[in-house]
Length: 279
Image (cartoon, rainbow, N blue to C red):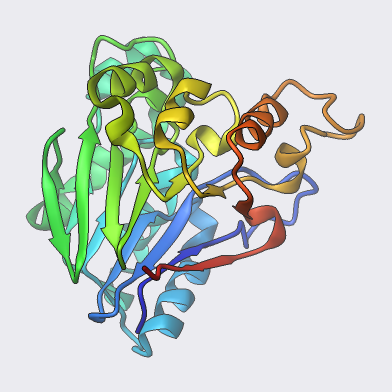
């Protein structure tokens, strides 16, 4: 095996405008597999087959499954696996930090169904569940995961996105920032604490590259390459009326990256992406 990030496209939707989602498989040269999020419920079979392909095992072993936050497009696949297909996969640890159901019902009730389902399934995997906190470090198969941010209940606006955990992974001599769907408020807290220490080689763009963290956060990260979990309609901000005619801010974020001189972009609009991490 090699040190690599597999960024998976939405495989289950036949819609003209497929949903945005996050799904990553990380493989290490020591033979471990780690999953980040996983996407929608319908992605379970594709994700499982990719794990089988990478590992060469019929029943792949996932050493760690990180869940950034409790939105459908990030955790449904994991819940489908736990509920209906647990015999097909071995998961050693699940890493997360979610707000309470009460917090989400009060501050983001229209998105509370996913977190309710997650907590209803928790007894099935409680023995492998790890609630992470800011400052934690986890070492998995040569990869090091530092938790730079965990949910702060002060951020009640954009509550679900601002509850994203922020993870910086070090693997193959490279630093990779995973921002989840972090919003501007929590992003500014992150920036105020770490400043230029956020510097990383790769950056997963917050909230699919639109309406996430501020330009100043990306300036501090100063990546050489960006990872966009962004379908073509969102990349072009076009839902049928033409280029950059919709309400999303992807083009603004793309402009920031151009100003920062970022030349390499991995985007799921172009299909699955594989990034080999080499010093």
